[in-house]
Image (cartoon, rainbow, N blue to C red; front, side, top):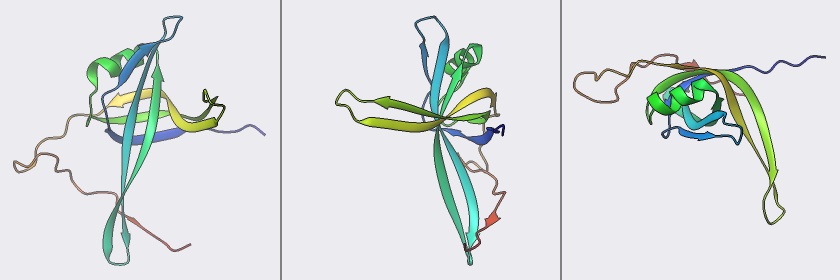
Length: 130
C-alpha cells in the first residue's frame, strides 16, 4: 500500500531562520513554528500551542533566511520526516520535523486599536471527551 505524507501548517516563527549550506552548496534554512489552536472546554475558552521544527531547501531557504524573522506568519506545506542519529556517547536520538515544499509569507499583522499583537479570534473548536 502506498502511503500519504502531507502537512499544512499556519503559524508564527519562534526564532529567526538559521541559513546554512550543505557541502555541495545547497542552501538549507531551519526555523521553529508555533501553531496556535483555540478550543472551548466546558464554558472556558482555552489556548494550545504546538511547536514544530521546519526545514526548507534551495532558493526558498535563501528567501526564508533573507525575508523572515521571529514573529512573522507563514503557511508551510510539506511532509513529516523523522531524523535519527547517535550522539558521541552512543545514545540514540530522533526527532520529527516538517520538510517544507513551499513556505508562503503572510502579511504582517496590523496593530489593532493601538495595541501590538492583537489578532482577530477565529476558528474556535469544541473539545470532546474521548
